[in-house]
Length: 246
Ligand code: DC
Image (cartoon, rainbow, N blue to C red):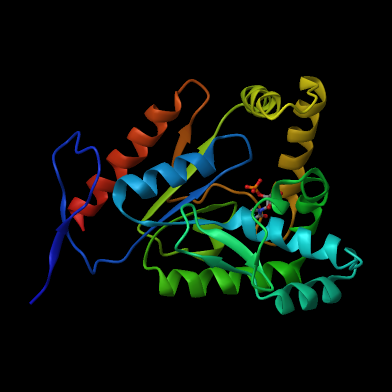
């Protein structure tokens, strides 16, 4: 007998009945400052799916490199040390907490020195291969998943049934980031933030491995003029409609 459950959520359009065994991978890609991570987490919660933050994996790799004194330009050494850290998530925490050598490092990965090197580090092909492989294993173990990053719909899960690409103008993203930093008491220069965002977009889009790109079959959502809840509502509507059509 096949069990069916209701997807939890706000049910603005009535509940959608799906089989509890139905695998659903939802990918959300896009540049920094589009609110991707918070949107993905909220969407996963509304739909009763697991949430994977792949940026946390690249950040964790950067923390490992810094804390172990690895030469970040030595691609093989980076991949070797990160592999030995056995990066994985504690799925009992919400959001899931990332661990290296079995130690939680979720606070460490948000620090400024990690932020400073993560983008160039994420361009290393050997590191990307390692983390993409880990993400696919996670996708097999958590088949009902909202996963967010830069390459989730294009490279990691090309067959995902629902893909999104969140975007916003660099100016909007810089002012969101400034607001976030002010909230944590860090000094803010919006013009510097804007040029950092433009440079990061350029390097994330230009790298040969897993470049930031909008997959042809992704729903592109410009979040510039939308409030957070409006973005989540829109994504939820699309997922529920797709699930109903499966
Ligand atoms: O989303 P974030 O800021 O936590 O991501 C951290 C860095 O990792 C950012 O420079 C982009 C990179 N990244 C990536 O290259 N591929 C992913 N799937 C996720 C993040």
